[in-house]
Image 1 (spheres, helix red, strand yellow):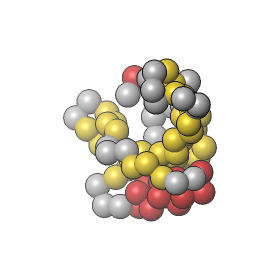
Image 2 (cartoon, rainbow, N blue to C red):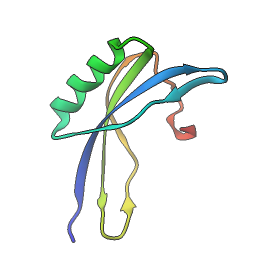
Image 3 (tube, one colour):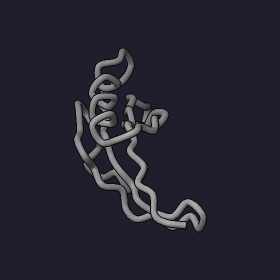
Image 4 (cartoon, rainbow, N blue to C red):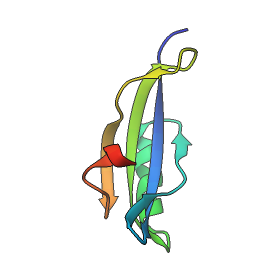
Length: 82
């Protein structure tokens, strides 16, 4: 199977130990991911959100690193811990 690129909007919420990721939402394209992330960042209870993409082969489960498209609000600098 060939590689596929997923576009995702990911909200962030305040947690007792800092910031926690909310539920990721898959989007159709990068523009939709940015628009959704901006809307999520304004939702009550959310402190920020980001839009990102990730490319890989769903058949093998091999995916590259996530590429941040845009950040809104309070988003952790180090996303590797999430």
